[in-house]
Length: 172
Image (cartoon, rainbow, N blue to C red; front, side, top):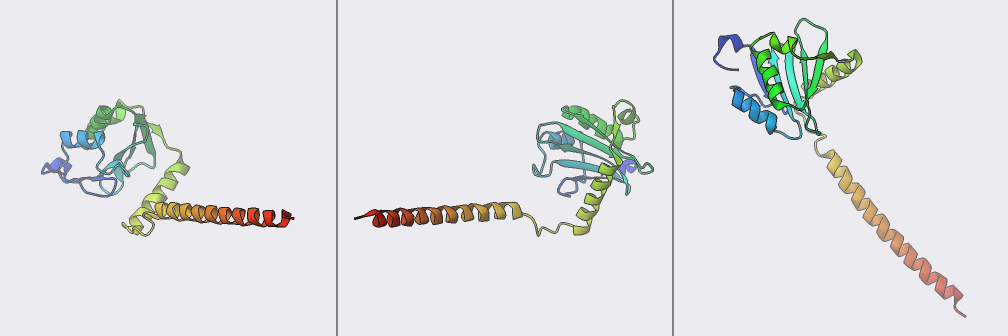
């Protein structure tokens, strides 16, 4: 993360996987206020392979903060609308200051939910940025909109033909 030997094993990345080599207090505050990728508003800080703390900005402006210890099976979360609090907790975690654990009302995540999240992370790691399905929703929306247009045109042509046919049958 920096030249600080106490933080050599700490790695930071944004939600889209972009590494952040030199995290500073100002940069973390800026990333919390304006996520670099609004479609994936995460900041993940890892220590080793399994220990991490991460935050995600939810659509309603609330931050979800989550952590897992390297030797613990548990996954813990908390929610807050306060970006400064999130920043302080994340920095305390980086500095290994016990305040982040003791002063925050963490609650355990249901093990079933944790398992699903773990599987999603594994799939994400396995696919490694494959973007085959990117944009498929927009493509499907466009295709369905075009189908609606064609059906509307067909309905109006059928309605015109039926109206014309009915009047010729009724004529004396």
